[in-house]
Image (tube, rainbow, N blue to C red; front, side, top):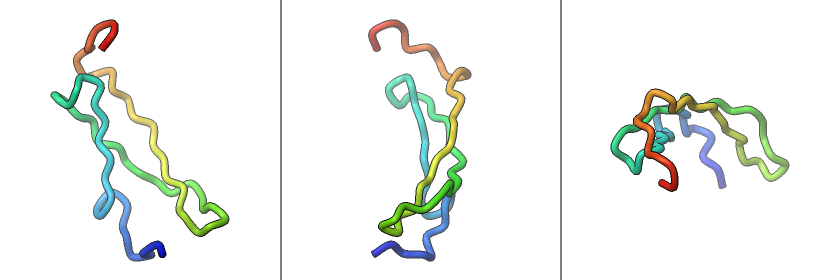
Length: 58
């Protein structure tokens, strides 16, 4: 069962890194829908361009 009291960006957070975890960018999660099985569809678009470029092949 899914706990309806879970709060996005408080109880569930997302952090994105493109350099192996040296720097992170926080995502701001938003519910965009609900699946037929009751699960919440959650998404965000994250801009990691300010993070260091890991280089080709990393």
